[in-house]
Length: 109
Length: 116
Picture 1 (cartoon, chains in turn blue, red):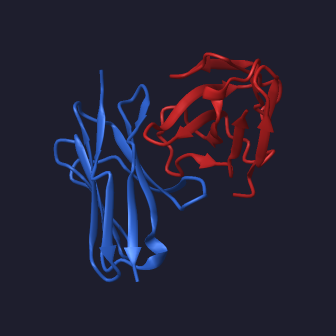
Picture 2: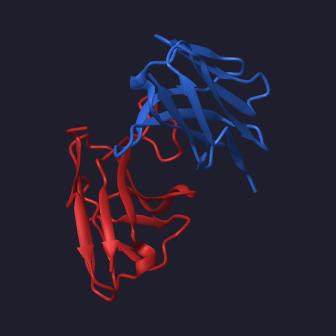
């Protein structure tokens, strides 16, 4: 069946460094969503990607959908302490959605 | 989000007791979902509902019961609580069941349930 791997599982960075998390699927995806969950909080929707090769930006966050629509990445430029949390991808194949296990980001001030 | 409310926020119950977690949304979303979140397992779907009176099982439905008599409410009942059901439970709603929504899923603040 379809699997979604999210890497890395954990990442520690110094404030100001960049951060990237990847979401990889064994099959072609129809769409992918990204969420952020602060410690003790609930997942919050960030963005949805649907087109091959799509790139979207939200301030310091850059989201990409691979050309083959099997992988996606979330890149944060110059991390801040407010970026702390777990980032989840949610991958769709037209029939169902599969959640990645998330990447937990810690930022040292 | 103010549009989806879960209650209670925290609950401690004893093994074998029945407990109901409440979820209320004001978005008029057709789809509602119950997830449990445990370390190492991410978010796992328990049940979902496409509309009032339409519900279906997710990945981990055993031991849980849902109902949806009104569009805005989607309660989750643990019929006889077990320690393995200690978890954080999230309710979510969406315009679309397959995720084809530009707004994604809207989650409630969660219920932290401990079964002792």
